Length: 429
Image 1 (cartoon, rainbow, N blue to C red):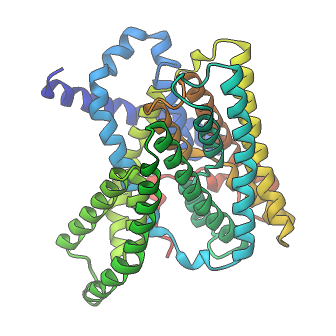
Image 2 (image 1 turned 135 degrees about the vertical axis):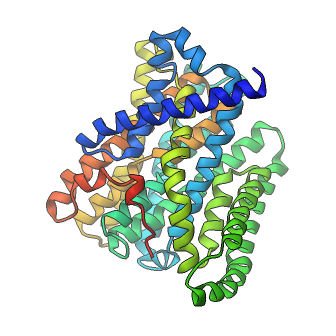
């Protein structure tokens, strides 16, 4: 396809994707599910699992292979912008409270799911064809263990904000532990990719470069930006030129972490966390968030769905493997985090809430398994099983929170259905 044809096709794809996501979202809200879950489901339905399966010719016309070279960078821009906003809303002071409980939940939320995931990776490697031939046993066990450690950190941030949990024991422990778990999982992914490329030095570059970037951003750039922000606070507005420079900083941060072998989401998130609070952060959220959540983020879910072929799970054995992945994910993350929270003196209701929130995989799981599929670490069949696990654990978050927590004094699941509605999003402080 020519550049002009790709552009025309891209606009058609955007229109159909947005309309379909809203249709699925209207049904999901009736079931008390957030819009982000609807978009995850819509992406799978638009892909070869349903649309491409029953209407293959129409699917090929709507999503030709050449169009992926346009849809992919657009989806990555949506991810980076979204994580930039999550960073803008992230409160470091929350991390300083209940450190002991957060550390215990984080450790349990990493060790238990990693052990179960690594065990499954060992079994799948020796007894199935779910890993390609070029993937080693070390890479298989490490990748599946890392994918089990993931928590839906962006969704955690939304739940904590919209449920009024900021500063509470439940919100503090869940958000702090989720951030630590995801950072550890990405470091493990860096090791897997370095091993896959047979370049151990790359792992040092990934981890060392990431630590260096975080230190420079939070301890050097953040104070510098805070000094400049005083002028904007006095004026009561963020000038357009400063707004553009903030977006440029987000893009450069995303570029750097992507260039060193981590993912763009880390650079964008840390750059958002470094932005001054007050007029700068509130203006950035107000301008960036609505378009990102409404327009760009659904493109990522659709792109993930286009890579998901549930029909590949065409035997009882493969569906059994998918069920094992789901059970290991729930037992390793949800139950382990609940027990860890209880062991550090947190009440049972709050501990149940923490376990429920930590168990949702959501967006971050899709990111890490997309990388694994694109790099050839996992097979399309295992990718499909992991997508199913990500969707189901995220689907369970709302009803479980309602049943185990909200009815005992927390917020309702109806509120959860609005977690990612663009018109509802606001900065948390």
